[in-house]
Image (tube, rainbow, N blue to C red; front, top):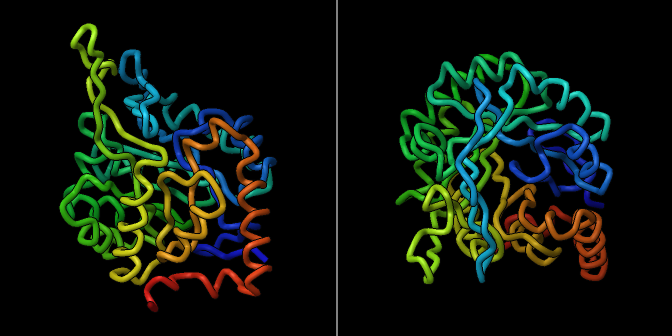
Length: 296
């Protein structure tokens, strides 16, 4: 009932692990796959080993989480074995990659063997990477085209919400040949310790994730669905089956789950069961609810 084909990849359900959560090792990715995910996305991988920002790099706030990890990773040269291990989970493995220019992205993508690539042009707290690139339409188009020319597997582009108009960035990705866009990454945020007056995060500011950003993500997915001819993958604040259904009604063909996995490794099975029960009760299919909010 929940199986889909997304950019040529066969998924047993439309629920995927988002980048940055349990995606550092092949073992953890395999565990998520065996816990019911339809696909898994790795931690973002770059050219060289990177230690990331100093601690504290993550803090829970009233409405979610703030993190400023700074894209720590072992480099693509040391990551293929983790991808191979993750593939033992028998679901598609999508490699999230980042770089400072199109040459960086194409070098990494051409060296890794993954089922698809997710281009991180949206991390809000890494100097010279992420959203510093992803707010420029020309750069997004150039990077997307470079990776499409370098690989023969699907290329997804993860978009930042920290822009005036996410539709223009989505169109740039589409013009560059993207097979899908992923919306959204985290929203810039900050927390201050009132006893000392100092920012809590080591990087001072970071990205807000969790339930608080779901309405923003829903609106971005809704707008992108109306603008683009390629699939939209929704992410941001999903913690139960109702959230997943809402994203699909807004126009997401599939969704990624991040923060909520930290509290419940079995969330993919829980959401799948809830969605199946809902669709069965309504006598609907995924196709029946896909984009239905645009028909009102």
